[in-house]
Amino acid sequence: MTFRPFRPNLTALAVAALTFFAVPALAEPTLPEVQALMKQGQLPAALEKVDQILAVKPKDPQARFTKGIILTEMNRLNDAAVVYQKLSEDFPELPEPYNNLAVIYASQRQYEKAKAALELAIRTHPAYATAHENLGDVYAKLASQAYDKALQLDSANTQAQTKLALIRDLMGGATRNARTVPATKPVQIASATPAAPQPAPQVKQAEPAPVAKATPPAPTPKTEPAKAPPEAKPEPAKAAPPAKPAPIAKAEAPSADKKPKSDDKAEADVRKSVQSWASAWSRKDVKAYLGHYARDFKTPGGVPRKTWESEREARLTKPGPISVSADNIVVKIANDEATVRFRQSYDSANLKTATTKTLVMVRHDGRWQIQQERVGG
Image 1 (cartoon, rainbow, N blue to C red):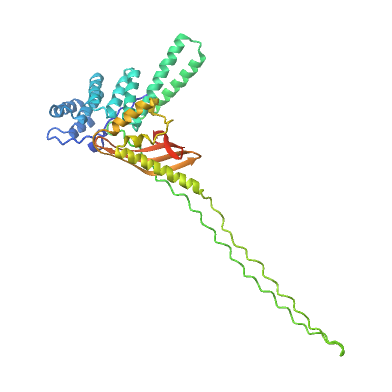
Image 2: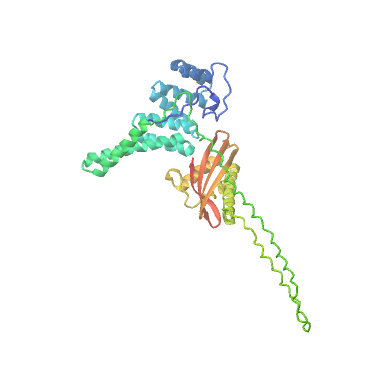
């Protein structure tokens, strides 16, 4: 099982995840030079140059993070762990140092420490997919250790044997299929932009069948009155009344499947609620923002609701503006539950991300509120 550390792009500094902080260019040396040396495998030279940068700007988060990566690739794991630990203390809002610290702990079989670090990364940035994947691997390792211990205490425990075999098979598959991250390809926090939803095919209304013109009845041929004897007056023949034309039936166009108006209104209400949630977040209106979450909202990691609300309030009330938008909204409604998938863009002083977000919303007392919130589909 391979854990995935975060590495910024060594060829393009602008796309590194830690570009949240504006770092003015340094005359000599520069981070692009450091990254070029890393790409060439000249790690000692890269370490020397990044130390020169830190001598001038010792608090520079990007330079410190780069130094941690260099030390990790030089297999100086304890030194790298110190760098990541200090960086997470000084900049607790950054998830990447927690993730890379967890990778080091996992390589040292300190899975509980790795688990704690990854949970901090996810609390800091719930959309960090790499941390979620690494946390799953850590749970698998912890489960394997627990089943091993159970078998040591009771070797005849067949259930533990079966579960251990499943875990080992899973771990073996993860090792075979592990996606390693080359140094020149960063792990992107943002998910791939979802394809724009295709509009439903329009049902072409059938042309009404042409109405056949009623053919007027043929005129009744005139008959010569029969000649009666001279003493009798002939009776003129009475013409038959003209036949009435058959009533013209109105052509009915085939009915296309249409959503009931109630569904259209529910979808509009859901979209309005999502936009209101994003607007409250952007305004940093904590009360309105938290009011969009249902009483039975499933908090990330199962943390207590009050703990989660305190963490969200702390993030919303940090200095500086916040801008949140929801685009490409796709809504699916079943009874009083809606699944909403959209593209979320988040921009603040320290963080700029774009990711696919899915909300499961429920209707309570006529209001649509968030019951589940997850990244991706």
